Each structure stands twice: as structure tokens, then as C-alpha cells.
Length: 185
Image (cartoon, rainbow, N blue to C red; front, side, top):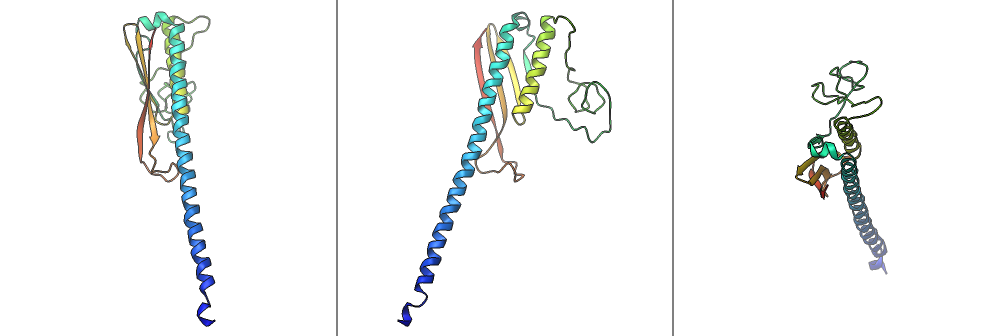
């Protein structure tokens, strides 16, 4: 009878160990599911952004034919807290009047037309709003619009999290994901 003493305790400890390993595996699977869901959401938002700019281009054929939409749009990060600038109008605090927050003055300010826009002004406004859409919805977004005759290619790329990294961990393990849409206008 003495030889059986403690055997039940060992069985319980082994069962708890197996349960703990199973729960860790379940938690890992849940984390992978969340990461993949976030990446899928980014792909969906990129699809919507591409469709958005293509519809705007269809509505403004004059600017498309003159190359008003051709080019690259990149996300600019703004930080209003470090310069102390309070220049009215651009809202980014860098003093260059362009509204992008980087201080270099290279971006066009928000296009405005009081009563009626020309096709070039409308294209400029469309690109500005598309840039805002990309920067709000996709991390480190870049959009490229290329035209070859009547064929238009819209390419959107963004930073996507690798499966082995965590957004909250400060890890920089990411890759560039790309969505491309080719249409005939």
C-alpha cells in the first residue's frame, strides 16, 4: 500500500501539464487567426481604395487622358508636437504650408475650388483624398497609378505583418503586400 502513495499526484501533474500545453497551442492558434484576419482586412481595404480611385478616374476622363492621375502617392507621417509651429491653414505644424507634416513643402496643399473645379483641379483633389484614404486605412501605404493608352494600372502596397511577429511587441518583422488592379478606361 505504501508503494502507491503519490502516484495519483503525479498523474494529476502530468494531466495539468498536458492541459497547459494544449491551452498554449490554442492561444497560439487564436493569435495567428487574429493576425491573418488583420492582414485580410488590409487586403480588403486596398481593394476598396483601388476601386475608389478608378471610379473617380472614370468620372474625370479629361484629366485621365492628360495624365492628371499618373504618379505615386505615399503616406506621410505628421507629428505636430515636435516643432511648435502653429501656421494656420495646413494643420500639420511643420511650417511649410503643405499639410503633410514633413517640413519639406513638396506636397500640394488641399486643392479647393469655390464654385466649379477644372478637370485638373478635380484630379488633384481626388489624389489628395485618395492619399488620405490610404494613409488612414493601410500602414506605410503607397499607391501608384500608371497609364498605358486606355489601360490603367492601380497598384497599392502596404506593410503587412509577418506570421511570426507581433504588432504590439515592437518587432519590425514585416513585409510589403501589394494589390494591383488593371482596368480599361
